[in-house]
Image 1 (tube, rainbow, N blue to C red):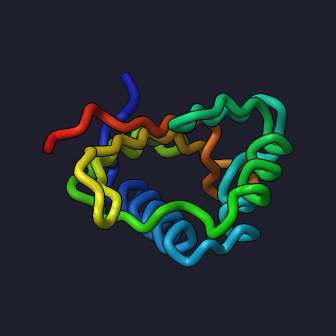
Image 2 (image 1 turned 30 degrees about the vertical axis):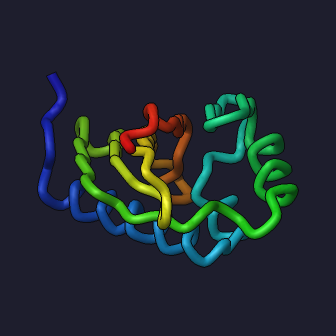
Length: 128
């Protein structure tokens, strides 16, 4: 079984997750593109779209006017699996919204650094 939550690896992935959240908030498309693995294996299931491959994900980001709606992260769980794979799962709420969102990411250490190779974003039923 791979080592869970090696402190050094956990710190690296936490920093990458923080970078992702800031880039998402600032709509820094080039940074977001660079954080995803650049290959056809990369998958992102969004609230209203299924995207296969880095090219589809990048095209989606460029077509989305204004970027992702602003949000507050409510809870985040990061788990490292050995030194080269990690998951980042978080709950969020869009500013002004009542629905709870969920985001799951699988991160992979590559020769170019940590990259998201799978992501899923969904919204739960309205809580109002």
